[in-house]
Image 1 (cartoon, helix red, strand yellow):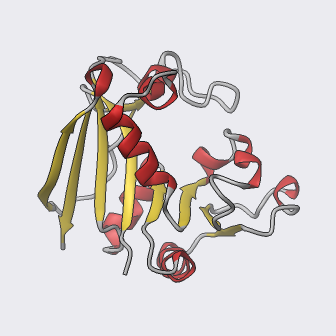
Image 2 (image 1 turned 30 degrees about the vertical axis):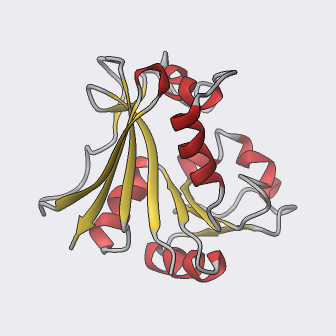
Amino acid sequence: MGKTVLYMSMSLDGFIAGPNETDENGLGDGGERLHEWVFAPTRGETNSRIHDEFMRTGAVIAGRGTFEPAGGWDGDHHDGVPIWVLSRRPAPDWTRRWPAVHYTNDVEAAFRDARSAADGKDVLVHGASIAARAIEAGVLDEMEIHLVPLLLVDGRRLFEHLGPVQRQLERVRVLAGEGGVTHLRYRIRY
């Protein structure tokens, strides 16, 4: 059975987006630098390995704040896998033309249904608030943090709203990627 895995690029000081996030500036000021390792013309062997790994997942779960500013990835994050969007609001009309996109506010149902749809492959998880809700519900299995050698100083932190319960993590792997990025993978112990 596949795992649910948060993939998140993060600055060394803990930010996943720069300041001044808006729908038009989805990663905030300077936040696009967090993803340069993915979009580099020559990605390199290790970074390509990580990219290929998350592109082989069987389903995607994302928060509205990740999905909508990205234009819903045109309804296809990668290779037509189903996408669950966690939101307290109903799906916008512009998403209705994409049958693989499912809006819900039920984190446990989203993770259950995405696992089922992934058919044994991993489920790719996007979004800070979704990660916090999934950890709180005990449904996030692992985290792959792409630690970027950058200090954003301000913006949105990944682990700002986890609640009062501490979680123990088990290191699964550490890979030194090209361009100074370090890929850290942890299993969450519940």
